[in-house]
Image 1 (cartoon, rainbow, N blue to C red):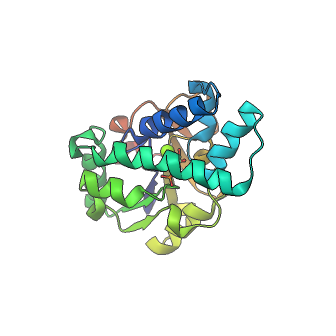
Image 2 (cartoon, rainbow, N blue to C red; image 1 turned 30 degrees about the vertical axis):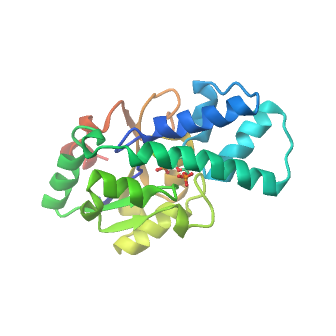
Length: 213
Ligand code: B16
Ligand code: MG
């Protein structure tokens, strides 16, 4: 391992919950009952792709301009939630893990499909913890496409095969494996079974565990 690449929403902070709250509010307006289980399909995928999944669940066909309007509405709610975020909302152990990896000369990268990732990093005051940051504004194809992780490895100047990804989404685990990287899942082993190892929280990870992969 020469680098470790972290997903943001759901791994470093519980913004995954804010995404869910905003999508649920929109789904309700559309008359769609969006369950926690449905929400697993939205994790890690881009904004319009997420809306398409909700419309598919509801059996609602819409023209592209209307989709853009609804996605912007959801985003406005999400932005409102993250504006109120406090830096203390970072998951316990995350910052210590970045510092420990740096002490062991492991590069630390961030790869988030979110176009709001930089705002969240700024709120948490951790922009300087990463040697490279790739967000949703920098990619054409969102997870499960491997583009985001490959781009991160290029910016970190490391081989993809020497990277470990930490992800909470099924789409993210798939993207990491397709990039030829190892992957640690954060969450439910039943959902993230393809990952090399699964933990329920980032606080359980350490340099010693990562280097066993
Ligand atoms: P935005 P991650 C992803 O971030 C979220 O998991 C996903 O739910 C969201 O739809 C996507 O970002 C796009 O976010 O609408 O803010 O651009 O998990 O890759 O950090
Ligand atoms: Mg995530």
